Each structure stands twice: as structure tokens, then as C-alpha cells.
Image (cartoon, rainbow, N blue to C red; front, side):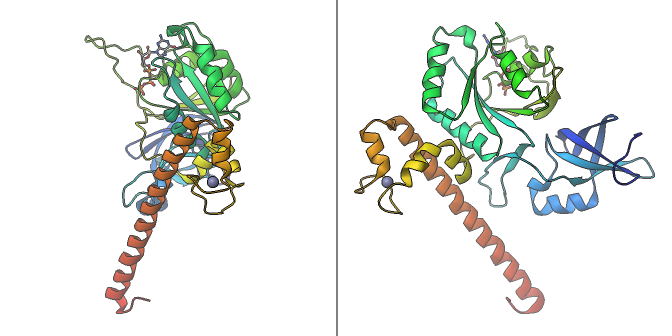
Length: 335
Ligand SMILES: Nc1nc2c(ncn2[C@@H]2O[C@H](COP(=O)(O)OP(=O)(O)OP(=O)(O)O)[C@@H](O)[C@H]2O)c(=O)[nH]1
Ligand SMILES: [Zn+2]
């Protein structure tokens, strides 16, 4: 490496992907691979979210024997974090420092709105600007109508129709990131994320074209990869998200800002928005301002977020108990 940052032996770069404890980092002087430094390993042992992930800016150190290690993960501006249910888990960081978080949903078969809501909650939770990207417009005739219906329900979110067959909407996505921004693609398997990356790059970088003899797609690529685009900016493909348990309260509040605003007007602070008098949410349902579908979707995700929060509390309590027992053993006191 020729050019160095603050210290003579360190350099700053952006993580393209992480493979079994090896970070692939893009620096001003080209790509490099680095293991995790000792302090970083210790931090990761305590909290897995401390590990470098795609999109992170990191400090890489070169040792006298030319070994390279990631010494530090710079603070994340935004992060797409999937809540996970495991007792140990603090959530899983899918990617970091993204400016736009796109929910990628195919137009065929017809998008399931509750699914879009769920993924949008994940997108809102990241701190990035959420976006809906509808794919495979070429296989349907009512793409425009579906996009319009969604846009009406999601007033704060841009909805972009795309097709990697006709090229529709690809220029819009390219324009959104052109100023040097980073776009993350979130969605279930098979909805066309890798195809979008390829269309944006103009070449087959992620290997969606590889088809096996039985006609099914083969995935040779390592996912969660950051790809720098020729027109400026970058795009991150994430692995197919199956869905359940990705919700946190913050993201949900963002995705349902309209409903949260309504709920603030309920007569009772602890209104459950079922049948209480003076419930502003129910009033909006009755006068049609809020759709029954969106209301049901919100309630379902809220229940999930509550369950997730309860598990988190239980986990923290478990950690405290273990710590107290450890101290009892060591010092004969629980204090
Ligand atoms: N007709 C049509 N087919 C598309 C379009 N985009 C993707 N496909 C097809 O849809 C299938 C899935 O596309 P992928 O890009 O692999 O989807 P993915 O979301 O990356 O899926 P995973 O890799 O499993 O996460 C492939 O057979 C693509 O060729 C499109 O715009 N139009
Ligand atoms: Zn209410």
C-alpha cells in the first residue's frame, strides 16, 4: 500500500464483503484482504454486531511481516439490522452506511402488501431513506396500477418500477446513487436483486446467468457484496430475507408514521386501538382515511415487535443473572 492514513502503518477503506473472518476491503490503492485484529476479535466475542460488515469503513493495519488486520470499524452512519431471536443475539447487521434501503419485490406474482410493510420496517429502521423497487415489470400488464396503489398507501416512499429485460427504471436507480450514494437491496430470494445489480453495472457480476442443467438458477456469488457502479455510487446485494423476526419498534414507527401520528390523538395514552372510546385510529378506519389492510398489517408487526422486545428483556436479565452468579463464585458476593 502506498498511501497511508493517520499512522504510517494504517489505511482506511470500505468493506466489500466478509468471508469467514476475512474482510475484503476497497482502499484508495485497490482491494485488499485483512483478518480481524486482536481488539476487534475481543469486541466481536462480546457482541457479534461489532464485526465488520459490508459497507463498513474500517482502519486496516499493515504489520512488519506484511500481515493485514482490521483494527477498527468506524462508527456506522446507518445500518440495516435484522433482529434475531437467539438468546445471545444482538441482531444481525446485514450492511452498513447505506443511504438508500430498497425493498425489492417482484410484480409477479402480485406483491403481498403485508410483506412490503415488513421489509419497509426493516428499511426504516436502518436510518437510510427507504424505497420500494418493483421488479419484473415486463411480465405483467398492470405494473403501473400496482405501483400507484402502493404509492398511495406509502406517501413518504418512492416506488420505482423496473425490468431488467426492458431496462425500465434502471436509469432512475442509477440516478438515485450517482452522487456517490450507496443503495442496499433487501428482499426475498428470487425477486430479482442480483439481476438489478447486474443491470446497474451493465455486466454479470453476481452470476445470476449461471443456469444449471435442470434449469434452476445457481448461485455462485458470495452475497452481501458491495459493488461500485460505473456511473458513481455503489449497490449492496443482501441474501434473500425469509421474513419473520426482523422487526424493531423504531423501524415500525417509521414505516407506519401515519398510523403513529393518528395514535397520538387517541383519548387514552395506553389505547390499544381496538374498541376504546376516543380512539383516533379507529376513527380513521371508519372514515376510510386508514385502510383496514394497513391497520391489520400494523397490528401484526406491532405484536411481533413486542414479542421481540420481551425476548430482548429476558436475554438481558439472563446476562445479568449469569454475571451475578459469576461474581458470587469469585468474590462470595452478588454485588
Ligand atoms: N422477466 C424478468 N425476469 C427477471 C427480472 N429480474 C429477474 N428476473 C428473473 O428472476 C429470477 C430471480 O432473479 P435473481 O436476480 O436471481 O433474484 P434474487 O433476488 O437475487 O434472488 P436470490 O439470489 O435467490 O436472493 C431469475 O431467473 C431472473 O432471470 C425481470 O426484470 N424480468
Ligand atoms: Zn386508539
